[in-house]
Length: 303
Image (cartoon, rainbow, N blue to C red; front, side, top):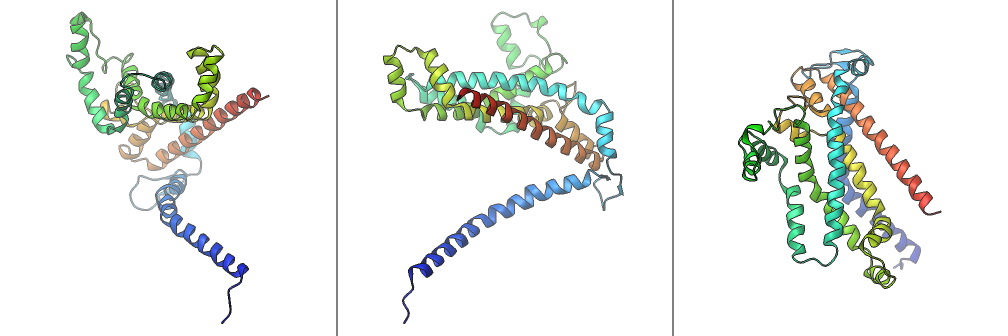
């Protein structure tokens, strides 16, 4: 009976380790390919065809769908709406950062406030849309609160009927919903900073603002960068809240809503696929530029 050598047992262990890794990765990789990469490839393929979404692909038209997108202003005018959500995302990050810093120190009932701030992110987007739809209605909750505090009922605007206010109102809903997510990310990063650093800075006479500026911000810079990237991506691809609350009417349509309408209302799936590809490319470009800028600043800071 032969005794297994060290080299053979080591080879068997490595083979078992590889097999175990493959078995664990098989299901998620299959789901990722089937539900992400394959639809993305089909979307890219459809963008070169004139197709209504029924039956086989109709007619190959090459880059005509992309030419239509870049030569018709109505397809890019909706990106003006994304600017409101981009500003809202900046406000959201600032508020989330403020509460994260505040609740990272000793504050009474801070666990209660953490739950209150994070709770909106747990609510379904459809429920939020319908809730705020009634919140912004004439004589709704917002109008009642303003009247209670002394506002004139006749001077109150139509929050979702005024083209100057509708996107501000929708962006405010987005800020309320997603602030908790960024708050938790910032709070987790701040709490990972060793307490000895704060104690040493206090001995040197540093105040809270100086601790934030020279300890907290440099330590959580990767999380800030990630949150900024997600905020820009979200501003470019807003869909759920404006679609549920206004169906994209009255100047609130976003690029994603227009893509959905093009595909399922006008049955131009090929053109809608090209619009989705353009949006994907824009998000990739913006993310790359932001990463390059942040990495450059980070490199200069370490010199």
